[in-house]
Length: 65
Image (cartoon, rainbow, N blue to C red; front, top):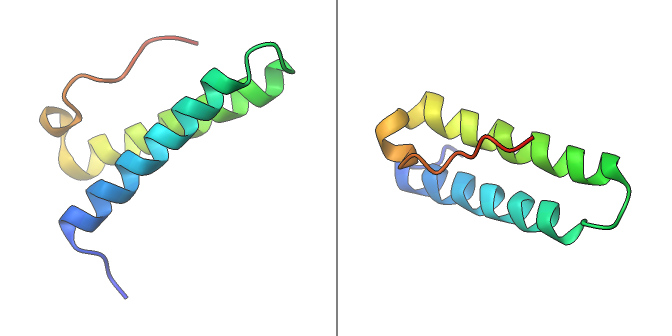
């Protein structure tokens, strides 16, 4: 089953939010847990940018490492 454009945007937004929260919740834990969440969040942000363009990303991408 294919997702509609709105369903795809919603899914990507949910994953970006999920991994952003996971990244924030791992403070004080092992750095690899934080790094993994950060890489996954950035990957979903990149997918959204590729599929929908930079304008739809609303410049929310952070440059934190």
